[in-house]
Length: 89
Image (cartoon, rainbow, N blue to C red; front, top):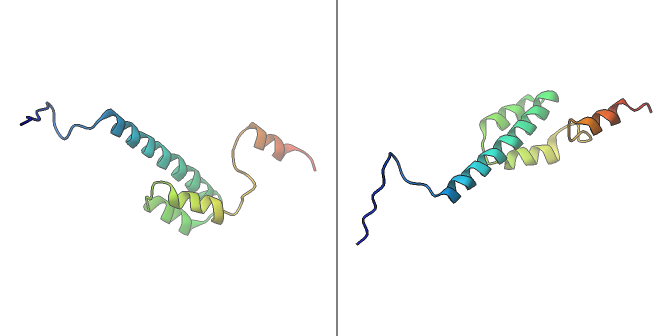
């Protein structure tokens, strides 16, 4: 019979599980931030509220960004998108 003894408080989590959890948290925060930024920028208050309250590991955020945001032409804020915006037509 094996005796499971560990020091400290709470259950022992494997390093692989902790890594998976960290990746999931980073994934969720990135998508949530991106979607909230677009919803606020486009004055979509209902979407902003639901994106802020509901946490589905990025699924709702991806659906919003893919199908419901108003300005789909601008994907990233960077030098290439700024250069395109400053070009005379």
